[in-house]
Length: 162
Image 1: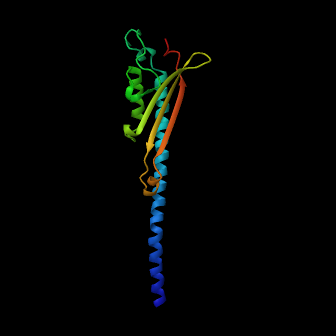
Image 2: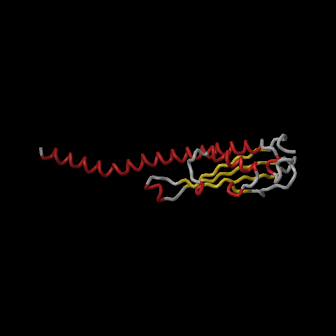
Image 3: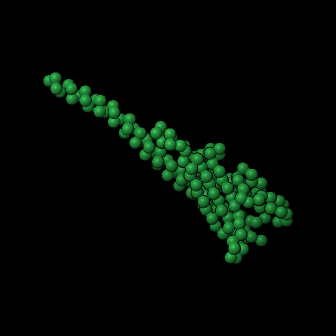
């Protein structure tokens, strides 16, 4: 009878030693799942923002969009915080709508770039999104934050160019 009580005490000690490790493992799996979800969301937002950018009329990038006369308001690459033209503000709004409020703006950087292709002078629109992912699991947060990056590039459609 005495031997049986000793074994039940041993089981309790083993359980208390294994439970924190099991808890951290399960919470770590949830954090990895959150990171994969965040990456999928920012990848989709970058792709949708680029798609929205390539169909914008070229006049919306200018200082006087009513008659398509004027100079380009923005210089590239630009951060969404500094967007002045109607087109770039619309692109930034579209991207932020696709982010589903998963991040605060202080933890994310959205960069838009327009560059000329060397072969046929077509304009290539590039959208980059960088997010600082902060894990909530105690063990993973000690390792530091994870930088997530998504990029999308498309050639601007001829209908958008004058």
